[in-house]
Image (cartoon, rainbow, N blue to C red):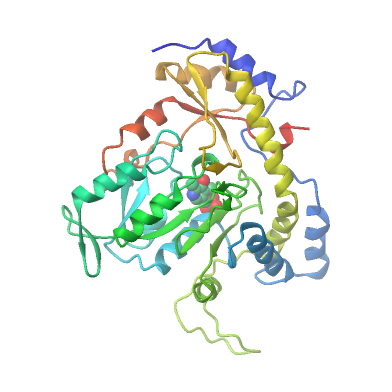
Length: 387
Ligand SMILES: *Cc1c(COP(=O)(O)O)cnc(C)c1O
């Protein structure tokens, strides 16, 4: 196991960044387009709240960009996951297969449905769910019955699987979709980190019944806070819109709600930001890919460290650039020195199975996720770092 020269790593990171800044964040928003004029229009007209033309415009622009038939804008990515899980039929006491290495939103959303997250290991090249390992595991622990897939150990139904495109790098969607259908699982793609990423030439979010996006402040584009559900099933898309907008039957004055709905809509003022941001998304992705090429080059001659590249089948937005240390004992030293020099870096999320509320949840062998957790660091990735 080789150790890396920490100051060489610091120099390599610095060489890819602007020289005249004393602080560089991990991923900061950039408002260089029509943000001011669209938001001003909301304020000038009074259309700041739950309906308005920017909501419709934003949803249409999202379908155009992703190629999906329908997009529904919602308050955040976590709400999008909650609705997506409910609408594919996740019920009380079901299990849902989720990556152990992910942001907490997925496991939380499973809990909102009264279901149980079941943690799955990562594949070392994509960082997302390992399809081969998942399949071997399912073969061992599950039993397929007429009404679905059951966990032989817990007796619970396993209803769905939620792959996530870690740091923007797509997972192997075709293989996961094939496994899902063979095991009678619904697949929901959590594409929160992957707007602007493509799998085999097609934008992510087009596999499975429903997919989710996030426009939080640190994502590739932001609406302040926000998210979306995208789908190619138009009837399901209409239901998503209905249930996230309080399930109110359209009428001139009457308030009639025909099911328990949610007030999960994205306000018009946030959608206005989203419209302006989406117009700049192609340039953002281009700049982020340029930055990742610079990093890749800067790290080639340093031993003991590697830079994460997009998988062969994918074109990644490189949402967060990531490096992996061969020697995990150097991780905290590197975090310490970069952050003390005003260059924000951070480790991956703490693995889900370690969090207090999920400690008793079912899981498979998680050795790859543990290895990634111990060795991987994210480095600055804002698009404006490239002039
Ligand atoms: C950002 C993110 C979400 C959604 O987060 P919100 O802050 O609720 O928009 C979901 N999953 C992953 C993997 C994310 O990175």
